[in-house]
Amino acid sequence: MPSPQHRPRHGLLMLLLIWVAAGLLVNLPARPSDWLSMPHLRLSIEVAAVILLALVLPGAFPVNRGSGLNRSPARSERWLPDLLLKLAALGLSALVLLRGADLVAHAAAGRPLDLGRDLFLLPALWDVLAGDPMRLALVLALWLLPAMLVYVLARRGQDLARRSLSGPRRRAVAVCLLGLVLAGDMALLAAGRGGGPVGAGALRLAAVQADHLGQRARIDAELAAAIADDPAAILPGPALFPRLRGHDVHLFFMESYGWSAQHDPRIAATIGHRLNDLDRVLKAAGFTVASAWLDSPVVGGQSWLAHGTLLSGLTLDRQPAYDYALTAGRTTLVDLFNRAGWRSVALMPAIRQVWPEAALFGYDRVLDAAALDYRGPAFGWPTVPDQFSLDRFVAEEQAPPSGRRQPLFLEFAMITSHHPWGPLPPLLGDWAMAGTDHGTVFGTAPPPAAQPFPAATTDWAERYANALDYTLALVGRWATERMPKDALLIVVGDHQPPLVTPAGAPRSVPIHVISRDRSLIRAFMAEGMTPGLMLAADAPVRPMSDWRDLMIRATREAPQPIARLGEAG
Image (cartoon, rainbow, N blue to C red; front, side, top):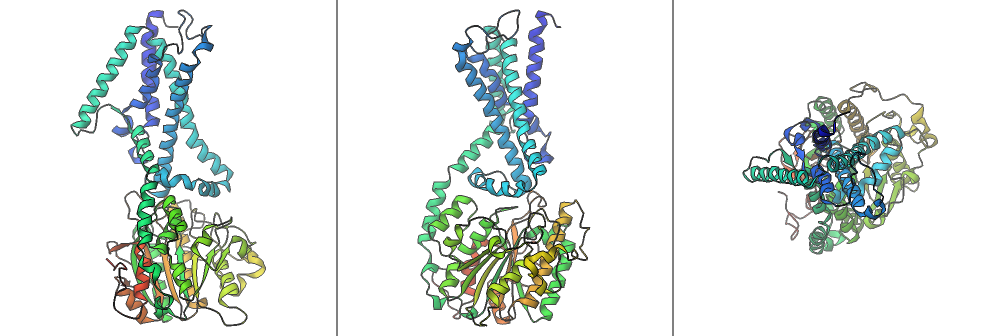
């Protein structure tokens, strides 16, 4: 046991170690490649403030000499300082939780945390994790344990501060030294040297998130102006899509189909081979294809924001914007096709709960998980194979018993390429078997043959390549085997994949238009699209929000522009 004169020195050393240890968690960078970098190793002003708060609150942790930190008889009268210290330690834990959420946002979505949009993702995240209790427990442990550890360290640091700096002189010296360090740090920061040994990165992160949360009013005002000044909202039905009159239009959102599929070296060879093969198959069947890059508003998740952006012609990069655009009555492609005489159908196999947005979009019918009534096995998170969903769409809408129907506008949210990418369902050679006994055939048919990588691979890039290869093969079979011959097929990625997308990669996603009407595809090429399925890595990228008006222009009869509809950039 150290002698009394050594206790202050020992306590100060322990206090410094606590400051360093807690700071490593409070300063934790969002990217593992930045761990143990200089910003990570800087002493945390947040930790220092929480610990030194014990020195300026009279009555907190009173010291009885010779007995260490014992509670005084008047402890019940000093509850307020103790409460404030506990709240300060909890605040430090909250900053660590914020750091953990930022790390998850970078890993899963390839972008920083944005509470203005990400708070709305909690139900969806829970839905993905709840199916795997072990994974859920691991995620919660990795997120909560650092915050709990920081709380314990902060409380221990507060105790040590009162013990080691019990005298007024020691407290004054400690506060002065910290003030000098902070002043030096601010001077270095002002000189453009990135600051000194102490930083307040966690508080800056919190301030940024507070700003995100406060942006909703501004977003609402900008969206209100855009919705009020929308020339497409007043276009009459006969003026809309005359070159598509009487033909089905199929809009397939391919989950996680992004720039990485064609240009990430880990994936590009596999998907490039599949796209080249698909290009040959489509041309042999009489199709012409044109493609372009679109800039998705999201990365790694929140597919519905990409769907809403493409359909509405507004950039909806966060949940409040999405909610506002729908409730304010923005005219979407669904509205336009309805107005022009198409029957609109949403094929949404991933929707397993009530979906109030369906009424706001104005679909004539929604085929969700309940309506599809799939009873076969689930394949990871994608619980319904895309082939089964398409087979049910044919039976329910495309091939009615009467043989006569309205032209269909189909929006299909494909899910087989949704993370975690495996196992993959069989790709049935006979479409007629897909709906057998509510899809139970998918539990007995052999798995897909000739996957580019082993089905049991643990490499995320390989699993992603397998899933996308499978989905593109299914698209080719749909176009050549089940789609009406005069239909227009539009295949678009919703966002770059989670986990696989490296930091700094483009947010671009491909869009392909596929039709046997060459003149129609040439009209899309006149809007800046290029022939074929493959796109150059540096090909021009247009906002995803441009697509609604581009569709109007490319499918009109007259060459003159529609007033005030944005031209292609």
